[in-house]
Length: 391
Image (tube, rainbow, N blue to C red; front, side, top):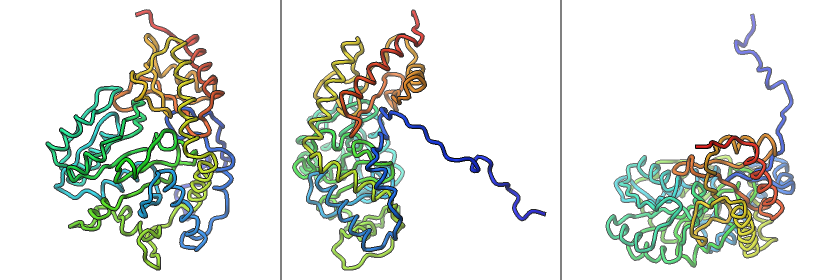
């Protein structure tokens, strides 16, 4: 009689095979060999002094990338959603008012997260492909008196780059913290946390940084920390409790660090290397390159007769472009054809943009004119070979 009732799975007796693809969707993006190599370094303990040194390097890199001097700056173990929850769970208590700016799916997600912990949530909704005015925001701040206002800077579901100037000042006028999601925009367009009055800012590792998914840089201002550390109740999540995370990352000034969780050490290697790549290019050079390539791409799309979903040029996200789904075509057939024929990923819409757009992401090392030409050629081929309705 066998001692195990579940036999060894045959699928795991075969070697792992992963295809190489051009990852030109809204994320994750391709990981260059240099960053893959960094992640293949030997695993060492998550509480070893060498890891603490790597974590310190990461903190410095995030401060540069975010343009902040906040000491409460680190990387959450998890994807951008984890950072979003870390921000909301630490700053918001049950019964408090939260205002979420909705210019796509991420404002909707932030609202749901706040609702789940008992906050009173109100939303202010931008038109499809548009953005909120500062007057709209101030009116809502005055009406709802929130403790936190959430806004996605780079809204990857709609391709909107939301203006930020002046919003931080408005939030502080109404004694509100300004929380910004920059997962799709960070490193690809100007953003200066301290100068723009942002209280909590986070991003992800898998977009412009070209690191594997799994770490999420985040930073909290002194104003945010004052509110967090004067809470009435502990945050609902132990894993995302800022007091514990601050100690693990050496942000609390204490001489010793306590075990909180096992940090993803190989992901830390990759994140450190991706930040080193950004430092070598220079933040302003990265911003400029992404904007130049996006303009080249937009011109190429319009020369093909395709339309951009975001009408105002200043509100177009340079990292993720949304193209109005070509009339008469099934967008799923287009994306499937391009994947099968060109080994290239582009995506359909997400959330409020489902069925309305195609989304193309050119981020970090993928942001180049050569890759634009590749995408344009694939789109031309798809429009030639995919079925077009006569209706």
